[in-house]
Image 1 (tube, rainbow, N blue to C red):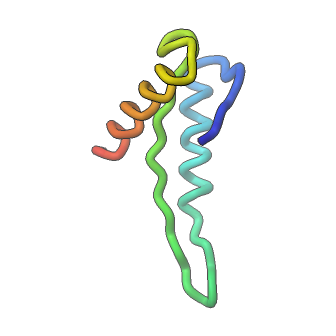
Image 2 (image 1 turned 30 degrees about the vertical axis):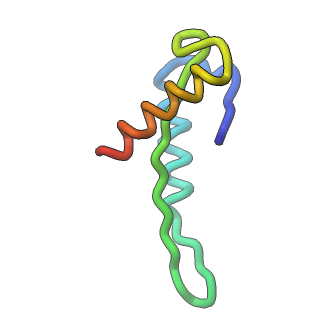
Length: 70
């Protein structure tokens, strides 16, 4: 989980999400083997998606599931 305060615009949030995906896509080398990870990310924004942890987590989970379907 990543909590990012004062993201600014939705475009900036999208840039941050893409950067996290790029970083997690880099292979991790262990014992001369390259391991590759994938990330599905869901984002939620306060107060648009909720003003407490539970509704924000629910909104992010729905968005993450949508990302996994792509």
